[in-house]
Image 1 (cartoon, rainbow, N blue to C red):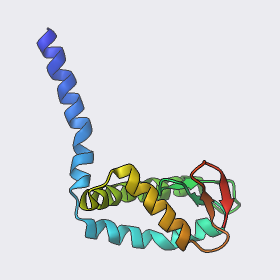
Image 2 (cartoon, rainbow, N blue to C red):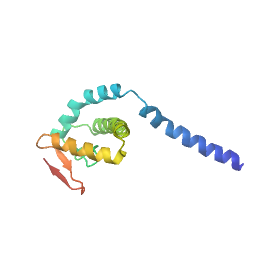
Image 3 (cartoon, one colour):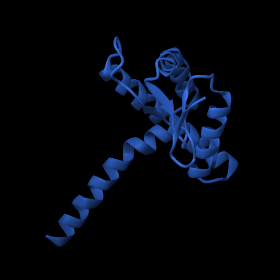
Image 4 (cartoon, rainbow, N blue to C red):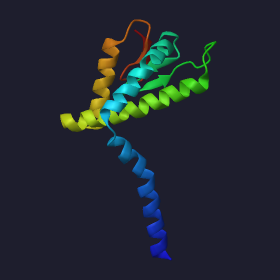
Length: 131
């Protein structure tokens, strides 16, 4: 019984981790394509104040209660974009031989520097501000 339980826990852990492993090995070119297809929508939502860029290089919903904005669509866009960014950051971190955390914070700084005025950004302290 103990062996069966241990095996079952191991199998569950393996299958839970499998999608992450498969996704990490996914072609970065297809991720880049998906991200560029989402960019116009993300820029629109940022300009409306719906989305902001947090201090670890990921999108966050700031205000989904904007008239004409579909909260379900916003959630899907943020989820898809953040999943892709995480894969890209992991690949960049591996290539640069730094930790994922270092890479994500560096990307957050680069995103903030390149953001247009009016975009919500998060400082390292966690405080939000408009550029």
